Structures are given as structure tokens and as C-alpha cells.
Image (cartoon, rainbow, N blue to C red):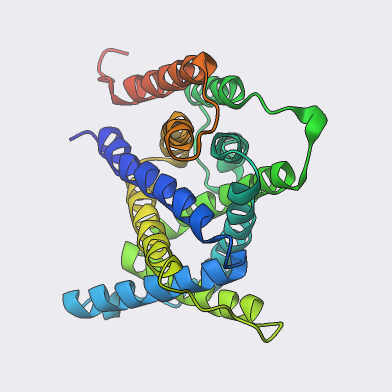
Length: 289
């Protein structure tokens, strides 16, 4: 299978996982703050990652040579994820994802500087089309800027940095090592931030399953995303993630009664067009060109 098509399949798993995590995060926000959500998510992640490493005998794959890069990546992700979890509780899900998706613009612009990847006109066009589609879907009212909009937009910057540093790590490290440092470092960060006031809320019978789902979905999302980034350039992988917006818009409509109109699907069509153009150019035969 062509590497770009394989990356697209991995990204479909990432899209489903991130959408699941958004719903679960909203369901537990009435009891847990964002730091507690991140701490419990990391607890679940550490248990799963350590179990898989033990079962497969891959503990030797854990590397420490690039521990500074891991720390920077996970600090950026921890910050972005906390902002994101807060945003999903105060503004419509589609609007959160729309503002979050400004991160591909940062990736496409900064990838040539940080990753040394080539910025082709087609990749740039795909990102622009995706962003136009996002604005059509969400149509954020900039006259009514609030904390939810600010945190959602800010999370995009940290997610862009996370994506680029993940791509950099995949050049020398396996997925097991990346996920181990992701979960363990963020567990420490979450424990420190959640417990700084001496009060950590425990999940109850209602929120417990949702917390477990957040941990599993978050880990699976990063597993799929890391696989995709190890196969194809970041400027190819990230625009595919735009499909997550119309997906979460429909979920918001069905689960929470959030308003979805025809413009959601108009925007989704533009997003699909940009992704299809990008994948088609990347996968077509190069002979004779």
C-alpha cells in the first residue's frame, strides 16, 4: 500500500479517538477539573503502555538520548490538552475543533524550518482549503470572544509544536518509546498540577468509565497519529485530520443538540476536496513528470 494511503488509514483511527475523547471529556467536566482529567488519563495510559511493553518484551526500545525533546513535546501537549479540555466544556464541539484546526497552518509554515520538509504548492493549497472549510463550518463570531474561544485557539499552537516534535522523534525512536514518555511524563505533570492545592477529586461510579474511556481513546489517538507521522510527512498527515471537524459537528448535533446546518456539509465538502487533492498528488506515479 502507498505510504500516504496507509497514513490516511491511521489518521481515521486518530479522528475517531479524538472525537470520543471530546465527548467523554465533556461528560466528566462537571466533577473533575482539566488537570485531574489529564492525570487520570495518564494513569490509564501508563498501565496500558507498560503492560504492552511487558507482553511484547520491548522495554529495551525505551530510549533516553532525546529526553529533552520528549520533555518539550510532552509539556507542549500537556498544556494544549488542558486548554482543549476546558474549551470542550464551554463552547460547541464543532467550534472547538474549528479553532484547534488552525494548527495545520502553523505546521505547514514551520515544518520547513523545524523538520526540513518541503512546502509544495499543493500541500499549502490543501491546508488553505481545509482552513476555509473550517471557517464555513464553524463561522466563529469574533465579536463574542470568550475564554472558550481563546483557550481553543491557543491549544492549536501547542498542538502544532507537539506534532512537529513527534515527527522529529519518529526519525530515531519507536512508537513504544514515544508513548511511554508521553504517558509517564504527563502523569507527573498532571499529579503536580492537580494536587498543588492538596485536593484531588476521585472519580465515582458515573465518571469512572468515562475517565477510563478518555485514557484509552487518548492513547489510541496518539498511537494512530504517531504511526501516520512515521509513514508520511507532517504536511501530508495533518490536512487529513480536517475530516474530524464535520464528524464532531454531527456528534454534537446528535448527542448535545448543538445546531448543525447546511454550511457544515458545505465546509466538509471543501475540506474533503483539499484532502483528496493532496492525497492524489502525493500518490500519483512520478514517472514521466
